[in-house]
Amino acid sequence: MPSYTVTVATGSQWFAGTDDYIYLSLVGSAGCSEKHLLDKPFYNDFERGAVDSYNVVVDDELGDIQLIRIEKRKYWLHDDWYLKYITLKTPCGDYIEFPCYRWISGESETVLRDGRAKLACDDQIHILKQHRRKELETRQKEYRWMEWNPGFPLSIDAKCHKDLPRDIQFDSEKGVDFVLNYSKAMENLFINRFMHMFQSSWSDFADFEKIFLRISNTISEQVMNHWQEDSMFGYQFLNGCNPVLIQRCMKLPENLPVTTEMVECSLERQLTLEQEVELGNIFIVDFKLLDGIDVNKTDPCTLQFLAAPICLLYKNLANKIVPIAIQLNQVPGDENPIFLPSDAKYDWLLAKIWVRSSDFHIHQTITHLLRTHLVSEVFGIALYRQLPAVHPIFKLLVAHVRFTVAINTKAREQLICKYGLFDKANATGGGGHVQMVQKSMQDLTYSSLCFPEAIKARGMDNTEDIPYYFYRDDGLLVWEAIRAFTAEVVDIYYESDRVVEGDQELQDFVKDIYVYGMRGKKASGFPESIKTKEKLSEYLTVVIFTASAQHAAVNFGQLFLGMYPEEHFIEKPVKEAMARFRKKLDTIVSVIAERNKKKKLPYYYLSPDRIPNSVAI
Image 1: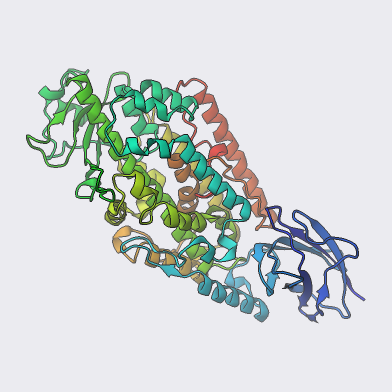
Image 2 (image 1 turned 30 degrees about the vertical axis):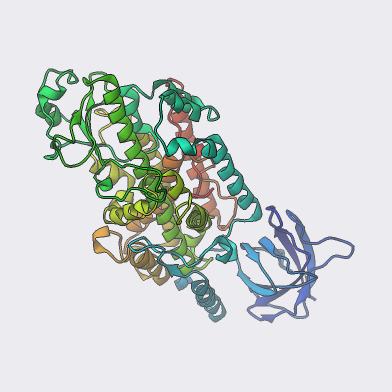
């Protein structure tokens, strides 16, 4: 009788193993086997991290194996099990891989198909078409859209983390890691001890240094020692945690009535301010988004304030970007003067502090929360709703949305909710941060997520004119590496533009993002469909870059881009493409490391060995 060797790999995360009964049946082109209990005498099967093998003898020839059915039945108590993969050795000696990489909960049946990536048009067998359709039907019931706040990108329909589908919840290890990191951050920032300082006036600039007592690294030490200097202030707009706001000033704004006479002590080329603008030496950061945002009033005993500054910067003869004029609000007038480097020392310093405070609010709520976390959640939900696990685009992107929905759900529970940390520690808490997201949605465009286009749109693309913009330089290297990798994957599975256009699952994925993420706004520039291989490659690059590199640049992550520990792809051409991708990333790591050797203040946030695959890792 035909005999198969079944190898079962259990996950290595906490509580991945199970004591439940596991049954397996094989579905082939010539018939189905009976259920077989996978059990070895005097052996603890399916322990965490175990790889167990079993002989399965069937009565009749099954033909080509198309599906594997796994049934889990309760032994004592309900015991979730994380199944990584199953490998099947056929009677002919062939090996077939069945990736799973998900939790099997309760008493349930899980059906797996082999790991070869397939488009819907590749499936000609009824049972495989049916499996594909049922998987999406089930997923669409589990992954539902919900409006958390009016005007926001839609999010997952879950009030708290435990309401999420099991496969996208934090596993126990990651959940503990989240809590510990959150607690550690609070400890590092002395949140409880300093809360009274955040809610009252500070009497001494030395108080700033106390924040850095437990945060010790090269960057924090440089910032602590030089934060009052104009050159450090300008540098942070290029390579700090929010390097996406600065842009070349093409024309002086009408609501900033600054003149050559006011700033001539800062202009080193003996030219007028207008001439410096024409030469491209003037830059601007405008915080107009904050104009009209309600200030935090959750604590009636604490007065809080917001500014909406306009900051003018100048590229001096040393090619350093330095501030030359600051107006703290949008409407000029006697009560809204323009502060200058020639003013009294602390007047100028306080003006820069207000700008930095405004930069913090934009960074936290827009650059970080909206433009990486919330956008990546949209990508993730659409992925699970519209692409089956066998689809090559699902296999490509799933690592880049891992735990994204979970961490965002936690944020809605603890951070940005009513009475959350935002309300306690931010001047935009109490509803201001919600207004900011709603207001920023008009600027959330597809082109603004395409890194090269975003850099060019701000006039920051000339490397000779602006030589120390490492965020741009490193970001372009990583973008191009990702784009080349996605292009290879697209070439493997889509032989022509016609196949791209005809892939209905792909088109549904793209449409879900447009309709629910971008709320169906044509002005967003997000495509409603994709018709060419080139556009598909670009789209996939946007998804991966946003979730990995862009998030790392504004959040300082630590894990490896290009590493795919879950082997959803089994085909040799894709694995070779992954290897080439990793090699390119290794080269970028070396280039960045070599440059940083010569820098007192290194920039490494976009070094691939520090870029996480997703916003939550």
